[in-house]
Image 1 (cartoon, rainbow, N blue to C red):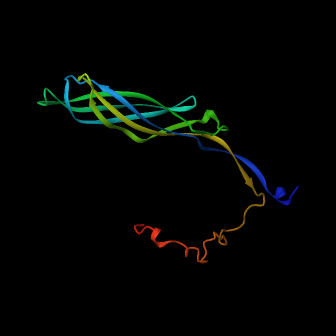
Image 2: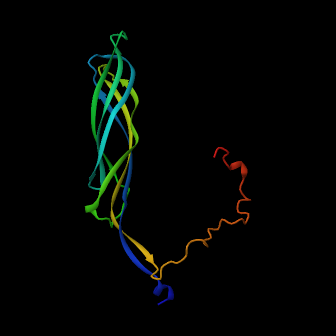
Image 3: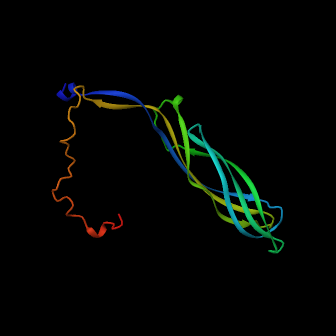
Length: 187
């Protein structure tokens, strides 16, 4: 056995860590039927977005809702109104990375809307009685759980106070080769 093998040992530490991650971008089209046949769309927006994350199989479900408001004109552009509709959705976000050694009984999931639901297009349907709303949204999800991490341990400890640590950033002319035109002045 080598000298290093006698001096160093390994330990398994149980810790909470990010054990799964995923991201999903989606585009969906909703059909909203206002009380009057629209002549033109004056505006469309999404408000009151609420959601929560739930573990589901190999992914995380984002369950939520939002309100669609459409400002439109009708009666040959002589009057206006606002049509409102609440949309509920369930978005399954697959986990692209999962730690196989995590403890499933300790899983906690979370979701973040990296792009809030946003209306990117509003058009009147071909029959003229409804409005088609194209919505984009994106979610990033994480699963935190307990897992094992293996570390190397020196049983003799570490007595250095850190004053003699050399990070290799001496005045050896390391920065002479930098092109000053590539540096940003705004920093």
